[in-house]
Amino acid sequence: MTHEQTADALDYIRTRGIGELAERMGIEFTEFTVERAVATMPVAGNTQPAMLLHGGAYVVLGESLGSMSANLWAGPGRLAVGVDINATHTRSATSGSVTGTCTPLHLGRTMTVHEIVVTDEQGRRCSTVRITNFIKDLPTT
Image (cartoon, rainbow, N blue to C red; front, side, top):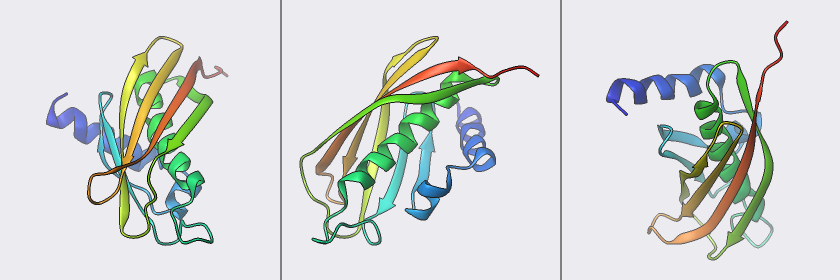
């Protein structure tokens, strides 16, 4: 993907938005192409009572990356919707921010599968999220 296409994809996010939940959690996209999407999220404000990053926060970051990537792949006039998501948490983040890196495992006509690796500021894997999206045509009116 050229620099121009990458800039167009980031404009897609700015135009479409990332959703109220992702905004509220402080998620920021830093890279966005069909082949790779990257976003960060602060730990502060997204913790559980033990002051660890909430497991659901990892999932929100993963779904935000995977669903937005699937919709970029789907293209105009089509909509990608999540049909399955799972996460395995292997380390706890307690401060700073985490980074999710999303890569496609399958890009099909009606289905995508993405893997999102979430790491802490030291580059250690904290969670692995996998999301499957179904792609459908938007109704014509």
